[in-house]
Image (cartoon, rainbow, N blue to C red; front, side, top):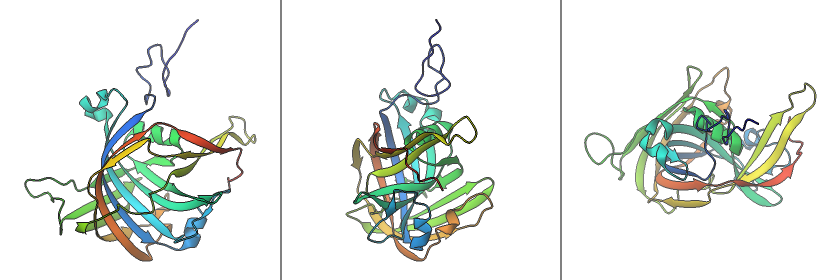
Length: 268
C-alpha cells in the first residue's frame, strides 16, 4: 500500500513538497498599524451570523502592513529566505460572540503562496497582492525608529492600487492599538464538491498567539488613502475619522485554535 505524507497538499511519499509544514508556526515581523473609524454599517455587513458588532466603537478598523519572516519549529526556512520572507496587508474589525469581544480579519492580501495556504487553514480570507513598506535601519537614509520618522506603505492587487499610507512617528506608546488586540473569530468554510449540497466544512473558530513578545510600540499619525477597484471592496471601509498609527516589532507563535461552533448559518 502506498503511503503519502504532508500537512498540506501536495502530499507525497516524502512530504517534502507539502506547501506548509505542521504547526507551530513562528513569526518575526515589523508592523505598521493604522486605526480609524468608518461607517459602523460597513463593518456590520461583513459580520456573518452569529457574530455581532462590538458594543463600543463598532466602526473602528485597523489596516495593518506586516513585513514577516516565518518558520516551522526547526527554523530551517530562515536559512532559505524565499521560504520564510513575505509581506501582507490586512483589515481588522472587532465583533462579539456570546458576549465576548473578538478581532476579525475581513480582508487580507499576501505575496507568497505558503502564507496564503496557512491563512486559509486559519480562516483568514487571504488573496494574492503586492505589498511594500518602508523598513527602518540605523544607517543611511532609511528612517530610524524615533520621533519624526516617516514610513510609507502601499497595497495593490490585480494590477490596481488599493491603499497607500504615510505614517509619521511621534512618541513611544503603551500600546500598539486596540482593534487587533483580541483573539480572532474566523470562519473556515469549504463548499461541497456536489453542486447544491451546501458546505462540506462550516466552522466558527477562535485562534490567537500561543506566545507573543514585542518591542517598544511607537504611536504617530497617518495619511491613508483607499482606492476603488472592480474586484476588491476595501474602499467600502472608508476613512471617516483617524484614530492613530503605530509601529512595532513583534514575535508570535501560532499553534492551532479552538472550535466555537460548527454548522453555523452565516453565509449570505
